Length: 282
Image (cartoon, rainbow, N blue to C red):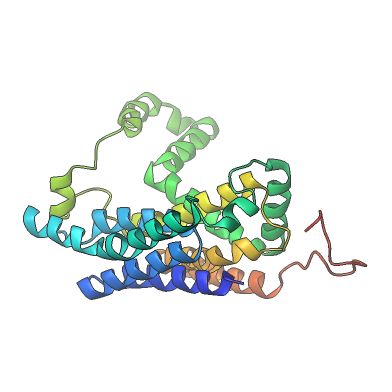
């Protein structure tokens, strides 16, 4: 089916965007993601986050005119390839999405079966739970919640910390105040607080994969094991790899990398030993 092509376009398009700042490479990356939308409507989700990624992190340190000009040029594949194709398709067939979207009940809800479909995949390839754990740990560190948790634990275990309780509580009071980091001027000048390596990976790779999983779970997944989740498999692997790549503690990084390899090799086959290759109607 179209699964391999769709996976290839998502992975290659995101790689072009992630590893280069050259205009031709960025244009190529978005062009490949446009082809992904034309292959399957689900690609629009990944194109949306890729566009947000380009707006936030590309062509910074430039003047406003250069910034906006380059951003508009990068949308040329969508404007001059996808939109004419979509209008032709809509004019010919009379449907907003391709027929397969409606045949697969893409707008209906079947949450119970979707949970079974998604859990079957992740319980088989449990290595991908690592991606979610790394994201959680990053959020804890980002918001300094881990520091607060450590303080609360130590304050209850050691009398030395109790005397500093009020002082530290006042110090951490400002941690939960939302401070705007989306100033266009700061983004273009490269001074925005969101300009961080992990933010890039989070926006470009993890967030669209997460919402894609939520969407598949909501509509009930598929009748073929893992077929609709294959496209995000390399994106989850990239998320794990890149988060480990920047980890400060080398020993922990090496142990986590070994753990990922072991979990990949020794995956769980839910169909092993069954009379028929069917689990939960999948």
